[in-house]
Image 1 (cartoon, rainbow, N blue to C red):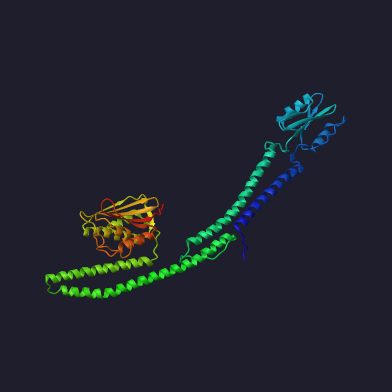
Image 2: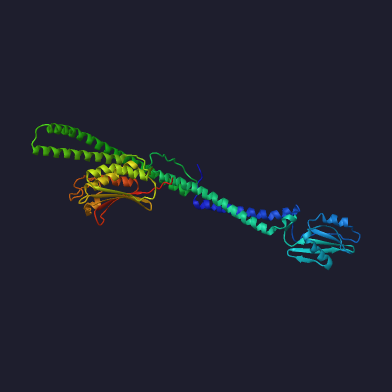
Length: 450
């Protein structure tokens, strides 16, 4: 079983890693100078050395002694100032000559130039007061400054590595929680039961697993209930259509006989009622299919093609109803996501309703526009306004009213449109502008960049 610990303990581990890393870094920075001095790569202030300058010491002997040290030097002939030997930088020769002429030490910045002599020879030794590299090419870089930079860079690296390690562990656990949260109750994704090293995250995961089980059971029960409803509606439609077909056949036979005007009127009324009845059950079947369908609501829909197809499909209905129809596309985007089939059906249902209830100079308009993260399809007609009762419940299943607007429908069309809007993470909105009535089908905008 994997060992678990709290977030506080895990953060404590990270802090401990940082402190231990910094301690190791400091110890390393303290040891490095001693190693450099031991290997004669670094000069430090206070390094002691003994130079024997007896009266009979030759130049070769002094040179041999100085070569065992790491300091720069110049060996002068005391009588004429001639440079006999040395290990020095030409740019610094003037400082050595100043010491020779004045016969006393000088200080240039962090460098001391000291003199040692006998009757024949004067030795000038360059001694730094701060740690300095022996290699002249590296002397441009201050060892102390380099040590500080190494300490800062090392500390930041230790902190970065430790914190990154912690954040990666947390990010992995958060992604696991996010993945489970986004797929709870999904039939297409099976959630694997896994754990993390953090006890708090494990508590959250355990709760999510429990809620996933509960949600799965509820969704399956809801799907079964909707399937049963759809089956019952389909069975009822089949049972009723059979006698309706017989009735229509008998009416056709009656129409072939000699009938009075009154009888012809009765038969026409019956035919109209049968047609309305069939439309009613077709709407019921369409609505019941919406409840149980598993359609893709992330189809990429091209705006111009969608609007053109919608106009072609609705134009004949508008012509039959003798309605002046106008369509405007004010969308800036060229593509969006949704379910094209259901969206078309929903808009056509609303447009048919609007055409049937347009009065006076019959006018219907459809305007597509966008606001922030929403796409809005505005359907307006020149009919009477919605009543207060209709504004509150016209999009509910089987809603009807007898005062003009809804007397010819059975409350299914707007309910279907409402269902489609909800499936698109939107809503159906009924409004009363200054003139006429308006229905807004609002869906969430998923812009596609192509």
